[in-house]
Length: 164
Image (cartoon, rainbow, N blue to C red; front, side, top):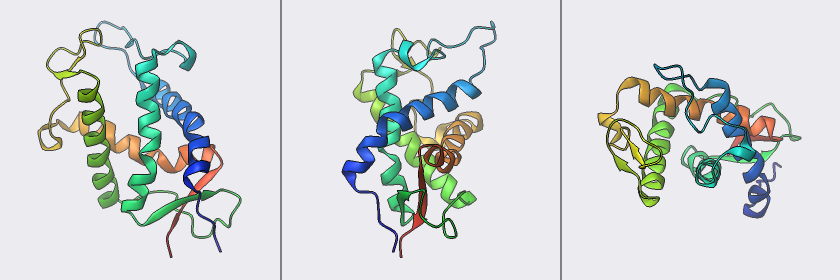
């Protein structure tokens, strides 16, 4: 029988998972039209605390996303025959919407408002809008974040399994 990771065990992986999320971001971040990288494109230790906490929030929410799919996180040492290594398109779309809604709530809770152009100092972001109003490029960011969940967990020593 596969033992589900309890909440205490999951808390132990939040920080490494948050760091892994940030490393994935760094691997994919691109410069703006002026060739400048965003201020968040720095190593974890140089990242402002509110952005570190954003990565932690994303890591914490992974359990909720998996629960919606009737899945759980288990130790990677368990048998890999039933492990979920990728999500289907329908699951990706559902989880991406959940991720966007989580992100919007987090930003609003921290005083961010919708507007253009993006301004981290003034806490203004153009994507603080409902999912259905996002352009495809913005939606794809959330889809990619969801697609990376199995790898992020795997890199942290965990796997995703369907609940019996």
